[in-house]
Image 1 (cartoon, rainbow, N blue to C red):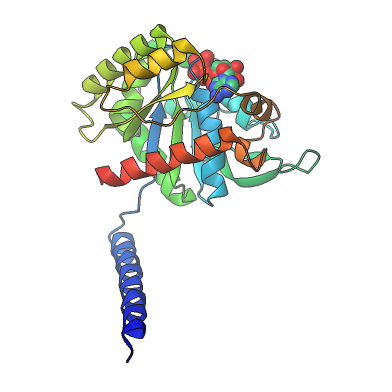
Image 2 (cartoon, rainbow, N blue to C red):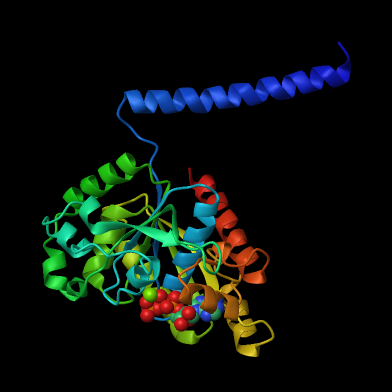
Length: 300
Ligand SMILES: Nc1ncnc2c1ncn2[C@@H]1O[C@H](COP(=O)(O)OP(=O)(O)OP(=O)(O)O)[C@@H](O)[C@H]1O
Ligand SMILES: [Mg+2]
């Protein structure tokens, strides 16, 4: 056999062996009742308005374009995430608050998000679902009484049943009770969007304190990183802030530009991946997702 053919044969054999290993591992896990769990990420900054909702919306778009199923959980009582994702859908009567108090099932508080692919096209489902928020989430004394383990089990069962690959959680800027529940029981990773101002940088300190506290119950909680979610190129302040946070070991060197595209697409309820084929903003979110995946792989 020629040397070139031998190399091709070895390449194919290696590929088949890799597929076989993934398949066998999945089979064993399923037989043992262990499911391949989704990547569960909280988006959090102790300061409001730094781009959490916007980032989740466009990241969910990138992931769904890749063919992955995504569950978005809105823990922010403002309901911006709920209203954005469910712009074209009738919202469920029950909310994530009802799920927490044990008065609704996970499926009852979840709705399918419909996105348009073209200006006047009928909105369609692309594998993104949203658990709806509730003004009552501000009631910290009630949240403190929630059984975190029970909520975690219910959520994990739902995630496996629905075959979600990603769970993206929108956290409010200042609700200690919710932060504690989410970081201690519900997610494995935290990502911190920054806007270019000193308050946002200070908000990072609050996130780190919450993470440290949660690690006593959830030692596997990891910080995926911080990134600039509304970056103005050619602006001295933004460049200065980027230089400041570049020194963090958690810094993700992908800046999301502050653009009209991003604002427009969110206003029309269409993630940028479904809005503009070629744009700097779309490329930036795609790069961010690549970096998130790379970091998650490096943890496992
Ligand atoms: N990259 C961007 N380009 C243009 N506008 C952006 C960008 N990121 C966020 N915005 C805008 O900035 C504002 C704040 O963003 P967003 O609502 O996502 O922040 P948030 O952290 O979710 O705020 P809150 O804490 O109030 O929930 C919104 O008007 C949004 O449209
Ligand atoms: Mg928000």
